[in-house]
Image 1 (cartoon, rainbow, N blue to C red):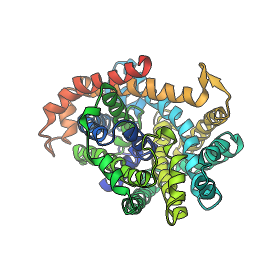
Image 2 (image 1 turned 90 degrees about the vertical axis):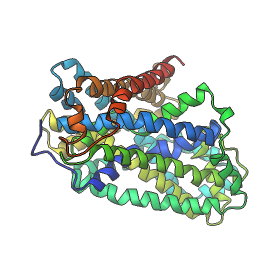
Image 3 (image 1 turned 60 degrees about the vertical axis):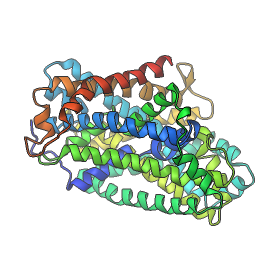
Image 4 (image 1 turned 180 degrees about the vertical axis):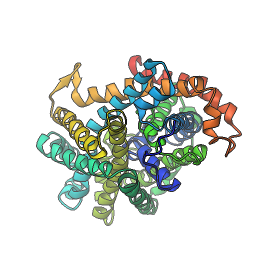
Length: 445
C-alpha cells in the first residue's frame, strides 16, 4: 500500500506540531473558554478531560492509522483499504466537510486580523467606553471589510499549503506553534497577577460537581470531538504523510495532549482577567470579540495584551485552516493527478468564493434553509458531516481493518500498545455510540 513518492513529514516533532496546529483552533481559544464559563467552570473542565482521554484519543488514532495504512487522502484511503465503494462516501464526507468549514472559518479567522490591528487603533478607547458590542456589530455587517480580511487570511493559507509538507506546512507550524504557546504564557502571567484574579482561578479549578447535568456531558462531548478536528479528513490526510517507523500511538497521544493543554491554558488567560474586571464568565460566544476587548482596555498596557491575544487567535485559526485546505487539496493531488500548487490555489479560491455568502449573511442576507448562510454552513458541517464521518471512520478502523489494525498500530511489531484491546473496544462500541449521541442531539436536541 505504500507510496514511495509521497511527501513525508521531515521529523516527528514537525508532524506533532502540524497535527496539533490542526486540532488547536478557534475551538480552543474562543469556544472552550466561553463553554466553560456557561457550564460551571471546573466541573465542565473535569468532564471534558475525561472525554478527550477516552473518546478523542480513540478517534484520533483511528484516523491516523487509516491515513498511514493507505498513504492517501480521505477519499483515496477508503478506496485503497476497502473493496466496497460505499466506504468512499466516508472520505467524501470528510473532503466536503473540510471545504465547508474552511469557507466560513476563513471569515471568522479574518476577524482576528482585524482586531489585532484595531487594538492599536480605536478599539481600546471604544471598548473602555462600553461600545465593544456596537463596534463588533458595525464591523461584521460591513461586508466589504469582512471579505477583505477573509481574502487576506485565505491567500496566506493557500500559499503555505502550496509550499508542500516540509517547505510549507511543517515549516509554518514549527514557527507558529511555539509562538502561540509563548504568547499564551505571557497572557496568563498578566491575567493571574491582576488584583482579584484569584476568584477566576477558583472558578476555573475548584469543581462543583452538583453543576454536572446531562447537558454538561453533551456539551463537553461535542467540544472535545470538534476541538480535535476529527471527522473531516484532515487527520487521515496528515497521517498519510507519516513514515512506517513512526510510533503512531505516541504521536496521537502528543497531539491530543497538546490540543487539550492549549484549551486548558486559554482558560487561565481569560477567567482571571474576566473576574478581575468584574465581568460575568458566562458571556457566551461574544466573550472573545465583545467582552474581552473591554477587559483589555481596562488593563495596564491593554493595547499590547489585546493585540497579543488576537495574534494568538490568528495563529490558532491559521494552523487549523492549513489542515482543512490540505485535506481538500489532497483529493485532487492523489486521485486526479493535479500538482500541489494547482490543487491548492484552485480549491482555495473556490472555498474563498463559497465563504463570501457567509460574510454577506452577517448583514442579514443571504439565507439558506431558513437560516443565515453561515449558520447553515456551520449546521451542515458541525451537526451532520463531521459526526457522521467520524462514526464511520472509527467503525471502519475498529471492524473493517480488524485483521491488520494491530500490525499498523505497532508499526509491524516495532512498538507495543498495552491498551490495544481497550482501544478496540472503545473504537468498536464506545466512541461511535458517543458520537451518535452528539449527532442525534444536534439534529433533534
